[in-house]
Image (cartoon, rainbow, N blue to C red):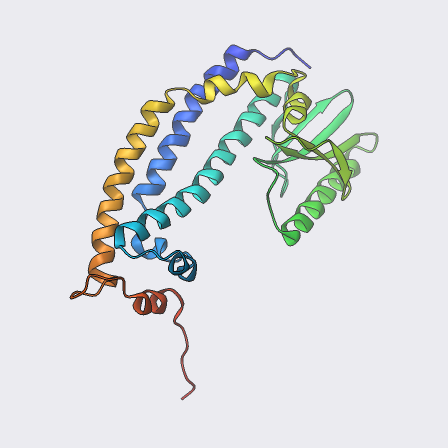
Amino acid sequence: MKPLNLKAVNQYVNENIVDFHQRKLKSLSDLKLEKLLTKNPYLFRAKNLTTASELIDDLLSAFLSSSEEKLFGDFLEGLAVFVAEQTSGGHKSTAQGVDLEFLNNNTHYVVSIKSGPNWGNSSQQDKLEQDLKTSVARLKQSKHSLNVQPVLGICYGKTKTTFLRGYMKIVGQNFWYLISDNPNLYIDIVGPVGYEAKKHNDDFLNKQNGIANILTNQFFNEYCDAKTGLIDWVKLIQFNSGNYKPQE
C-alpha cells in the first residue's frame, strides 16, 4: 500500500463534513408534521407527554437520531472509499451490497461498510451474506487465479476480527488499518471530523428551534382540544394507525 497522505484526508473530511451538516439541515427543512407523526404514538403516550411542545420535541429527537445515523454513515462510507483510493487504488463498487473494492498483497477485497456494530436484522444480514457471496463468485469467474476476501467493515467498535457467514467481520481500529496500513488512522480522523462543529451545530440548533415552533403550532391546531388545550390522543392515534374499513 502507498503511505496515506493525512493532509489529503483532512482536506477530504473538511470538505465533506460540511455536506453532512448541509444534508442534516435539508432533512430538517423538508420535514412535515405528517411524517413526524408516523412514529409510535403509544410509546409517547406511555411517557406521559402532556403538552404539544413536549411531544414535538421528543418526536424531533427520535427523527433526528435515526436521520443523523444514516447521514453520518454515508459520510464514513465515503471517507473509507477515499482512503482506499489513496492507499491501494480502491474504488466504490457497483456490485449490489458491496461498497468498496481494493487490492492488497494479491488479495481482492470486497467490502460492505457499516457505520456501527448494531446494524440490520437477521434478514438484512442474510441478504448481505448472499450479496458478498455473489460478488466473490463473479470475481472468481472472471479472474480464476484471484484470491477474493469478502469483508464486513464496521467503522467503530471494539469487537475482535471474526470469520462468520463466509466473510471477515472487522471492526473499528482494525477496519481503518485494513484500508490504510495506518494503525492510528481511527484516531487521526477525529480532529478533522470536528471541523467547525460548533458553528454547524449552532446553525442547526437555530433551525431546529424554528422548525419545532412551527410544527408545535401546527400540531396544536390539528391535534389538541380547542377548549382544554390537551392533546387529543384518540385523534392522533386514528391518524397514525386507523385503517379499518368494514366490508360492505
